[in-house]
Amino acid sequence: MNRRPALSATPPVILYHDGHCPLCQREVAWLARHPRRERVALVDIQAAEFDATALGRTFEAMIGRLHLRDAEGRWFIGMDASRALYAVLGYRRLVWLSSLPGVAPVMNAGYRWFARRRVRLGRWLEGRRRKR
Image 1 (spheres, rainbow, N blue to C red):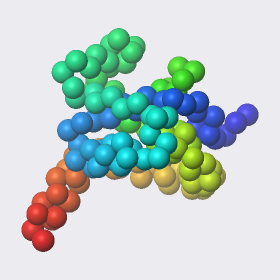
Image 2 (image 1 turned 180 degrees about the vertical axis):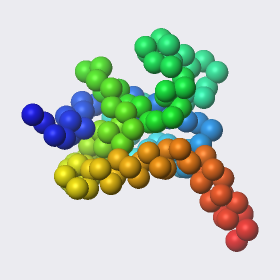
Image 3 (image 1 turned 30 degrees about the horizontal axis):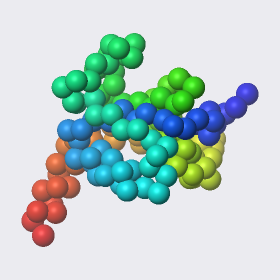
Image 4 (image 1 turned 180 degrees about the horizontal axis):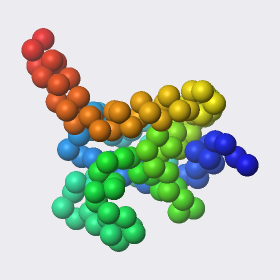
């Protein structure tokens, strides 16, 4: 049994992100400049033309956690979506480390905490930058 399924993600992948999230926007901008950017297609789920039901999903489920679909049609959700993304970009050792017993549960819990607060945290950070 593969305990690190994100390492098997097959490019190209589609990353479904929240275009209204300031921190997500920063990550997307970084991905757009990444040397391996051709491995990742970016879809803003806040865009007017986006239809989650066409993917067999709901907008409510997708807005709450990161979603990634690989070339084989497999879905990776939450921290596993982040791991799959980084594996496809070539950061396989980082993914392996984040999947170790003892580390994975902490990373997964940290992701859930962050996902619930991402917009608020992003606005707070933007406000601090403007004050400088």
